[in-house]
Length: 112
Image (cartoon, rainbow, N blue to C red):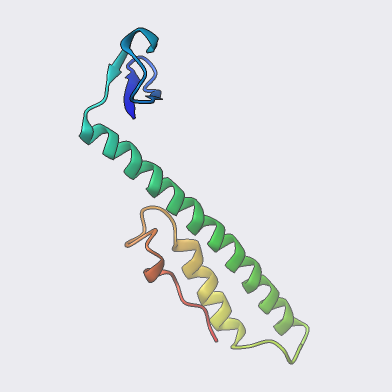
């Protein structure tokens, strides 16, 4: 693949290797290998961040469900309400900028 950037917008364009210069949009600047790697690395990081934020949303729903079970005196509730509240606080802090985010191995661990 050949990668180019439109300098005014920063938009990236990719062309198959067999595409000739006469078929490439004028005004595009070829990207260096390091720039291409940076684009792919950022795309991977954005994907990981999205995955982690979706996981947090799912976990927050589980916390809410457990707290409601405790409120209702349901015998299927596990742990303590305080443990679930502490977990909820940890989830709120699991955002971009937090140490190790978005490394899944460092996610907050819920009560059991």
